[in-house]
Length: 104
Image 1 (tube, rainbow, N blue to C red):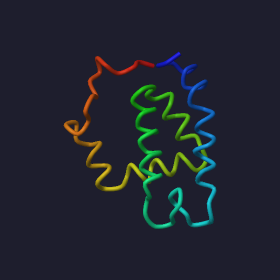
Image 2: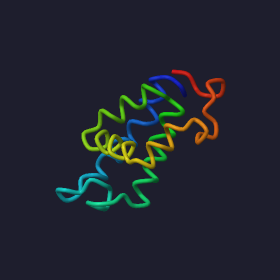
Image 3: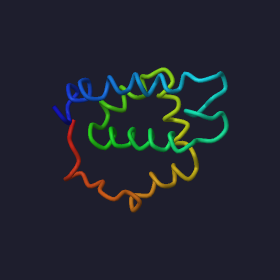
Image 4: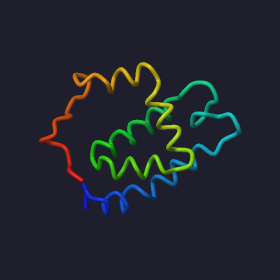
């Protein structure tokens, strides 16, 4: 199942709805529990998102970005200067070698 659209659909989709609903806070809240700054929970969810991207690649990210609130949140988090710098630096990624990544 892993590395395929079926794996993404059966494993990730139920979790995505739960994550998307986590952002249904008061108007103006751009993060899970805060309007102005991300909290520990935001970084935890970002870790889940990057893990899904690592394991399932484009099919998973298409599902994530298709969520009403979660998709824009991912874009906001990844655009944060220090997070963007981390992911833009290939030396930051512990195991990002194509030979060990799951293929879609």
